[in-house]
Amino acid sequence: MVFSLTALLLLLPLFVLISLMIVLNDPSASPLYKQVRIGQGGKPFVMYKFRTMIKGAEQMKDQISDQNERHGPVFKMKRDPRIIRVGYFLRSTYLDELPQLWNVLLGDMSLVGPRPALPAEVEQYTAYQRNRLLVTPGLTCFWQVYPDQNALSFDEWVAMDLEYIEQRGLLLDWMLILKTIKVMVFARGE
Image (cartoon, rainbow, N blue to C red; front, side):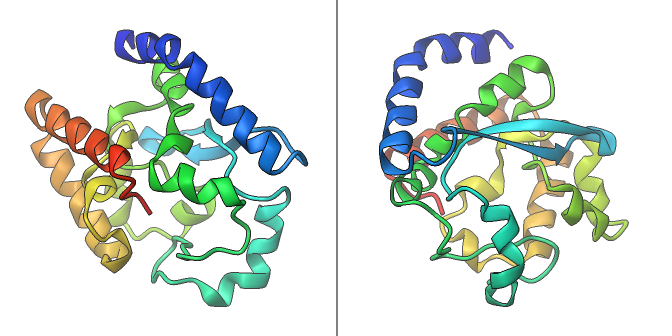
C-alpha cells in the first residue's frame, strides 16, 4: 500500500499526460475506464485502467467474437479494431494498467498475482482454473512478462498462475516487478 501510494503521487504528472493523449486521440469518453473484475475468493471489485478502446467497445465484442485468437474463456485479438491509436502504445508499455495502483491501495489487488478476470470468464472456469482465485489478483505475473503471451494457451496461462501461487514470496515478487519494468521500457507488452 505504501508503494502504491508513493507511485500514485510520483506518477501523477504521467497520469495527466496519458489522460491528455487519450482525450486528444478520442474525445468521445473519459480517459479512465472502470470494469468489474473478480478478485480473491470470487469477490467482484471495480478495476481501473486508462481507456485504450473506443466508446462502446464492450458492446461490439459480440460482432467480432469469431475473431478471438484465444481458446478458453478469454478474448484476445492482436489487431483489435476497437483499440484507439494511442491505445496500442499504452498496451505495449502497460501504461494503461497504472491506474490499478489505486486498486492496490484499496486492497482489491496486489502488485504481483494472477491478473483479475472478467465475471463472464470466471463463469466458464473449470474447478482447476478457479484456483487462480485463491490469492489477491495482481498488476503483474508470469504471464505479463512472458516473451510471447499470445503463443500461450489459456491452460498454460493458468498453470503459470498456479505456479506463482505455489512459489510466491518477496524475492519472486521483486523479480517479476523488475521484469515488468523492463517489459514496459522496451514496449514488449501485448
